[in-house]
Image 1 (cartoon, rainbow, N blue to C red):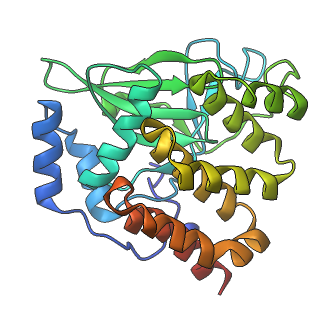
Image 2 (cartoon, rainbow, N blue to C red; image 1 turned 180 degrees about the vertical axis):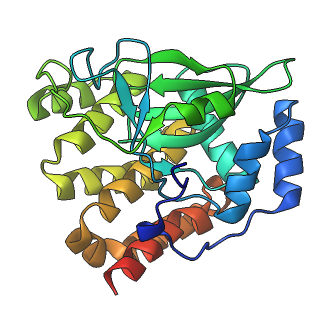
Image 3 (cartoon, helix red, strand yellow; image 1 turned 135 degrees about the horizontal axis):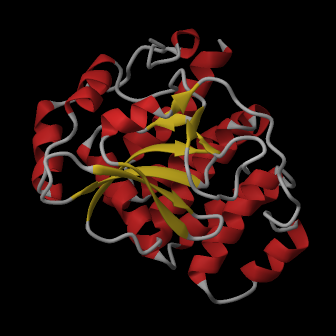
Length: 267
């Protein structure tokens, strides 16, 4: 059986799983977290899994039937109550209702989450913000694990899937905050004019004109910074001060740990 965590990228866990956090989350969702999931998170509280994709049975914006229907899997979310709340706000921004908890993400546009009902086990779903859709993936977490694969098929990405930078900037001049959040996610994927994108996120966080979107923009900022080491070195101090200035509005410890992890990788 394939190991769950990528041993080549395994790092010392910064924050161990707290049993009190598990209890608070389970009370909040009115359900029990899957036993296999808890075992994996107690071993390593978040990080990069060995599997790189999740095989699915529905059409999506990432793959097609020719390459094999699948979606990317990049990281497992650390299991803390604060992170649960932050990512719950992201799901709510994209109109995901019910008792839910995000537990993994792929390429900044695909978010894997549990949906808790009266059943013993939560079902597993995927939110695709690139086209604002939700997809049922598996009846249980154990079933979801059977869909993981370390073999990444060659993916043909049609040009129509992602916006161009001029199209993105046109949307950002508008008033629809959901459309603007989606446009920013497309900008991240384009990997163009990243310093300008970082400055835009910092301005949004500083002004905090849209508090419901603050957490999303903060996590987007961290992702862009950690993907651009030179800019991370330049902006580290000012970004740290900015995040800390938001007080309880952001989970500063979790956000700033992203930059620290990247620095440790480079040493």
